Amino acid sequence: MAAKVQIVFYSLYGHVYHMANAVAEGAKSAGADVELFQVAETLPAEVLAKMGATDAKKAFAHVPIADPKHLVDADAIILGTGTRYGSATAQMQAFLDATGGLWGTGALIGKVGSAFTSTASQHGGQETTLISLHTFFYHQGMVVSGVPYAAQELLTLAEMSGGTPYGASTITGPKGERMPSANELAIARFQGKHVAGLVAKLAAK
Image (cartoon, rainbow, N blue to C red):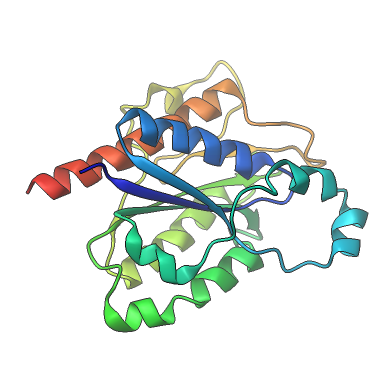
């Protein structure tokens, strides 16, 4: 049986969406059955337009909206979100807050959880955001995965790059002008492949 991996992301300007696709590529390369979902937007259309996010949103308008109840169908759940002051976006947090029923029944216990993120600056709270998402996994009784240093791209010094042992990440620039680099996408693909591999190992026990 192929591992069932759900990638649930919130993206405002498209950076996290690109990372989500890379994570999906990695999981698929390990033979996983991958589903991509986006978290529902809570900002009004006129606000998105003023923020310049409308065109970016159109790029992934085809991605279905995530339903918390469907998380139970996954073997692994990989969350992706931008950073707001060192934590997950309000949209992602609202999605997680809607999983109380799953917590109450223990429906996610034993599943693998992992996360990736983006920030505007190099030290803009990537690691705290990822760790804050890890606490959700712990409370749900999940097995938490980051990115091991077997991903050599974590050690690059030749360029500015996101990527942490807690999860893949990208640096967008203060105006969102920088899209994920080849190095950052490679880390994201490694994360997807690694999570899918963990599911297979756990299933073999």
